[in-house]
Image (cartoon, rainbow, N blue to C red; front, side, top):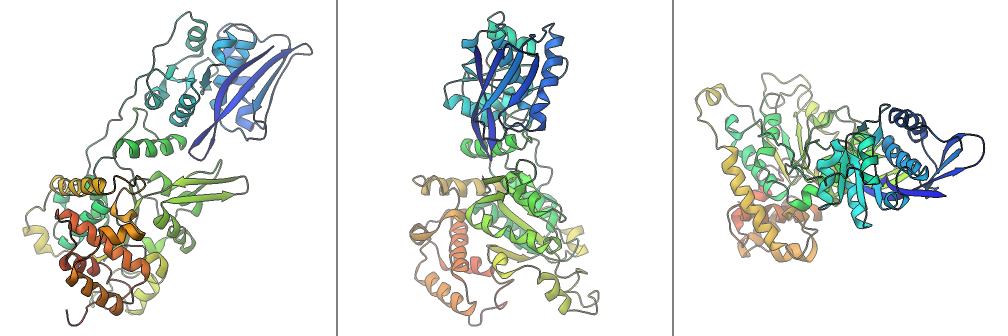
Length: 509
C-alpha cells in the first residue's frame, strides 16, 4: 500500500504542490528517496530515522521507497523532513492514511524530534488553501502561515504532537495570525538641520514613489536623509504587506512575530554583486531589489558600485520586476521599489569647494560620476544637490519639521492616488502611471503646457524624462491637495531634472 501526503517546492515566490508517496515493499531493508532530491532532502533519511527513534518507533524491516512527484521538478531544502516522516508513519499504519492525504506539511526535523522553522511557510499555506487542504508546520512558522486563512494552519513544536493530531489523540488548535512588532523609526526629520530642498525632494519621493538621487560632499547629510525616509512612508496596504511578506518568507527573512506593515528598507553595501542585487545563488533566491519590494532600496556611494551591477537596476526601476535567468532556473520576482541613491561629486568629495578640491578638478568630477550611464540617470525622477551645512546652521537653526507632520501629508497624497487609480489595481502610485492615463490625470493648464514645451526643447528631454516630469508634477499637486496641474507644479518638477542632462538655468524664466 502507498501512503500519500503533500508538501511544496518553491519556484520564485510561488509554492508548487508536491505529492509525497511512500511505499513499503518486501525485500532487503532500505530507505531510498527518489524524485530529483538535493543533498539536504537525501539526508532527511538519517534525521527521520533518529527522530522516530526518539519516539520509540523503529523503521520496519522492509524496503522503504519515497517518491517526490512530479519527478522532474528539483526538490531542495530541509522542509521535506516532516512530510516524508508523516508519509512513512501513514504507510506503517501509525496515522490514518486518509488524514495524511488531506494535508500539506513543511518542517525540518531535529534528531530528537523537534520541529525547526523553515522558509516559505506563508506561500506554502496559500498553496494549501488553494487546494482545500490544511498546512502542518513548526510552531515557529505558525504566526506567518496563519495569514493564509482561518482554521487552515496547525502548528506544533515536536513531531510527537503532529502524530497525536493526525491520529486524533490530541488535536491541535488552529494557529492565529500575528503582526510583527515594528520598532519606531530611529531617525526623524527633526534631526536634519537645513537642507530644505532635500527634505522637500524626500517628501515628494515618498508621496509618489519617485526615484531620488542626491549628490553632495561628505558629511552633508545624504545618508541621514535616506534613513529618515521610512519615517515618512505610509504603512503598507494589506495587499502590499502580503506581497512583501511572501518574498521575505521565501528568503527566510520574515520576522518570527508575523507579518509587518512597515515598508522594507534595504541598504546593500557598494561591494554587492549582481546576484546579491538581482537574485541568484542556490535556488535563485530573491535579491536586494526584490526584498525592497514596496519599500526603499538605498544605494549609498553609488559610483563605487561596479558598473555592470548598476546597470542591472535599469529594467527593474522601469518595470517593477526582475527576471533571474540561470542555467537551472528562470524566475521573475516583483521589485517595485523606491530607489534612493547618494553620491559624492568626485572621488575626493570636495569638487565645489576651491579651497579643498584636488588638483584634477573639474575633470575628477566628470570621471567619477561618468561611471553612471545616461540611461540609468534618466530613470531618477528627482536629482538634487545636497550642499554642506554651515556651522552656524547646525548651532543656531531650530529643529526642522518632524517626520510625523510630513507623514500626514504623504499619507493624504497616497490616499488621493489610491482613489484616482481604484479601477487600475496595478497602479499604486503616480510613478506607475503611463500612456493615455498619464495624459488624462497629469494634463497641465495652458501656462504649464507652455513651460513644459519650452523645457522639453531647452533640456532636450527624452520621452522618459518628459513623462517623469509629468508624474512628479502630479505628485506635487497631490501634496497640495490640488487636482489640476499648474505652472508652479511643473516648474518645481522640472527643477529636479537639471542636475544632470541640461543647463542649470533656463534663460527667460
